[in-house]
Amino acid sequence: MNPLTVEAKIDPDFDCERFQVKVGNHGIFNADRYDKLEFSSVFWPVQPDRSKESYFNRLVSFYEELKNGGFKDYGERGFSGKITMLTNYFPRISLPLDYLEGAQPQLFRQPCWRDFRLCRVDTPYATFNMEDYSESEWKSETGIIGVLSRQDISAPLAGLISDTARYSAPREQLQPILAEKIYVFRNL
Image (tube, rainbow, N blue to C red; front, side, top):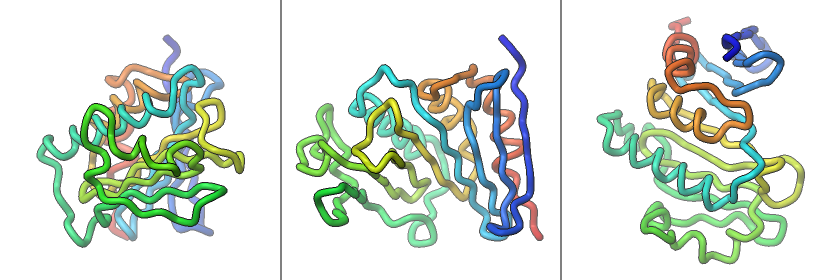
């Protein structure tokens, strides 16, 4: 396998450092680190051959890893515990976190599930989302997954990226990059 490369640049307009992690000419993930606000946002395009239910179930597993993995519960300082859905046909819809639970989550039975553009899940540990910028409903051909966190969640996040990114790399290669570049906040 080709080695991973990390490109970084400061973006003064957004007061962040932007990263792109690549294998060869293919981007695996992008990330923005906001040192003053102490959070990072990581996002990547997904493999086109899986269903949105499959990706969402993997995100629920990721959430369970955070919940049971000893990560800090930021409570009210973190992210409010809810699911937000945006579609072209419904106004913004907010649902409780318990819609994630079960083998067939209640979320899958909501009318907004069929054609959402954005499904954002805010938890006390991190926010994760499935988003599609094509102005259409989320499809694996054009959709992305994103994760925003105030703490180093590099180990479970490396697994999530490795399992879902369009161009992938082993978690063992991704985790050190996330831990050493993306989740090291510099006090400015």
